[in-house]
Image 1 (cartoon, rainbow, N blue to C red):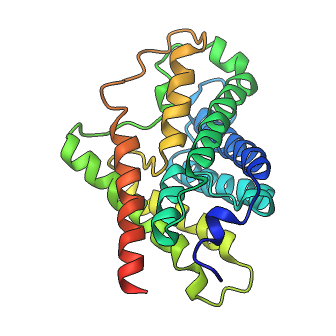
Image 2 (image 1 turned 60 degrees about the vertical axis):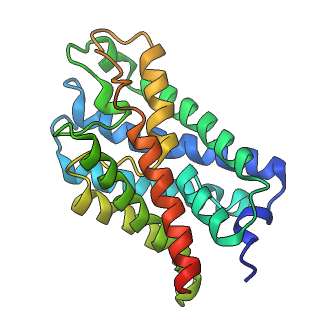
Length: 242
């Protein structure tokens, strides 16, 4: 397989549709499980961390199966950067990332609409439904956590072609996301995806949610810079080792 296939095999129109739709589905389902567990009037209230990690894993699985044939289902600017570093083809990177951001904005809005009644009855800050935040606010540690988690994700994706998975690559990636959440998600909530964090954070700041609290813009750079650095590092190491 040509090293540039992940970036250049799809038309611009297919990339826009696939990445927008897929990222919207990812955020709808991933943000949806966070809303289900967090909002007090939800039947899944207090379901816990396992529900969140598996919910995000299923979100990746469903979104990727929906749009893989259309755009390759990158759905994550860090993955897009990792694949571009691997292949050397940057021609569609802005389109991929722009489409992912648009999809994240749409997905976050759909979460709000799905749980509109629960949000209207809300009495607590809701940023955790939309975006990540650290348990201990230490920028160096928080940044390193996001770099490490994203590096694991991107290396798993980049090495799929080196393994005989017989079409199971999407499932492996989804399970990798579950594993990252269970093992590495405790410190920061494992954004591992700039669009997944920034798009919903923007919508949290805009949407008319009662008692929603602040959007924590002072932290917002970490789940953007960390994953992008982790993706780039994975691409560099892959090229050095494989």
